[in-house]
Picture: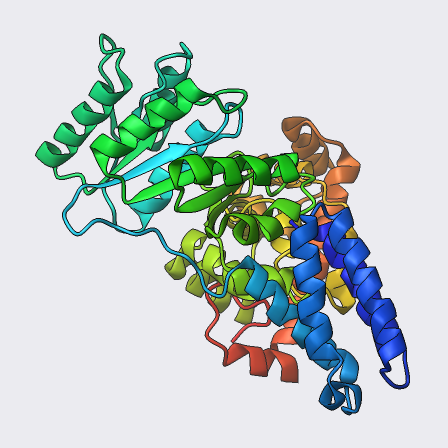
Length: 450
């Protein structure tokens, strides 16, 4: 998310830091580079113009130009303007005074409405709600079936009447079921088209007039850039959307849609899809997004992910083992499985500040298949071998390699890396850094013990 834009802005700030003093001339040069970076990220030209004017007005003041650390002040100004463009606060989903709350999910065909509906249902159920899904897309034969399959995978309820072919009747049926079963929220997955047409808008207006939705969420594909912004603007003019869900933010999207959509429509970006899995939906936090764009990372989101995925008792047990030098291969395997629950390594590294070694890690190519290989090797060991790696001689290594479908060299590499990791953890746990880290209340096992 925002990688290309972030790299370009980092170069601009690096050049500013290299200047002995900030002048009107080199500030203008920096603004031109920022302008180009934003346009190349597919940010709407009106947004770019307003953004540059805002930064210029604040950065050209005498206080900034004569300050002791002008480059840092410029970075702060750019961050403040980014937050202003993205939204000054996190926009949460509104609920009705009298349940059930109705949320209409709208958008063009292929934007990811159905999968976003299911992801949203999961997200809401994890946050104390009792959602009921319903698909009113009676035109695509597989649309209702697709949502039914997703609902079954998530073990969440869905309303469907195979004999019913009226979108409004389906939605009303879902509302009755929600009221009878105590469901506090209804997610209505509406039909889409390849382009906006009168029939589609008439149907959506009818649903809106009869269901009185608290939220109308427009789902847009971030990969389509300014096309997503134009569609959102048109839907808002014709229907009155209340928020936006941007899908495929984990792909090659340049970030232009995210930076443009609120300024153009006046409606907030509420959620972003960051992958294909059902848990790959995040609430959008403007300040955190601004930090990531500027290479400052998103540590709060990282910690939230860890807290959701890591078992606290297991974490405390692992911390004790690290401190007492009892970290076995079985523990190593369990840690890898916990790590996999957090998502791809690349997405996790993207949440960390891009400085020093972390920047090098971010740019490194991560082979996700290596996790599967390592787990297969450890699974092919006996319980005694996992408990005491010193038992693993040459004949055992050959057996483990054969059982895991790997090579003896792969087994050797794993044992070598495991040995180095144990040694490093042992030395660090007793040092100054380990003692300092040991006092911190971390939501995951402290690698330095304590």
